Picture (cartoon, helix red, strand yellow):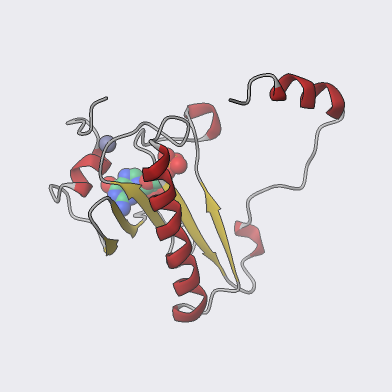
Length: 141
Ligand code: 5GP
Ligand code: ZN
């Protein structure tokens, strides 16, 4: 497992080689504002070590990252007057991941910015829920 990828922009931010608007840092985790914010205060929480995404990050590190995401979300509600928060992570390009270093988005939501909501409204026609349950359960380790 490589913990620093010299081609990775978030590794460079974690090591102070590229500037970022940092809002939190400890031994393992750093959080900073997204340069293309989806809302005021949109933050990214990352491990300092390089892992490609949520699906292959070390579990203890993942827990630390989500712990910080929760702290930031709680702060956003008070400090920025957010009325809701989206916490999300994208895994691989088909899901919208553009930076291949595990990161969690913390996106504060405000009154009257409905147009920025993530689209969770549309569902699929063929749901087939029992068959899907059986398939997934076979592979949960
Ligand atoms: P993804 O699409 O991979 O889930 O999210 C990557 C995020 O990183 C995007 O929202 C993008 O705006 C942000 N981003 C990309 N490059 C930089 C950078 O150099 N600095 C900061 N602060 N954010 C970045
Ligand atoms: Zn990296």
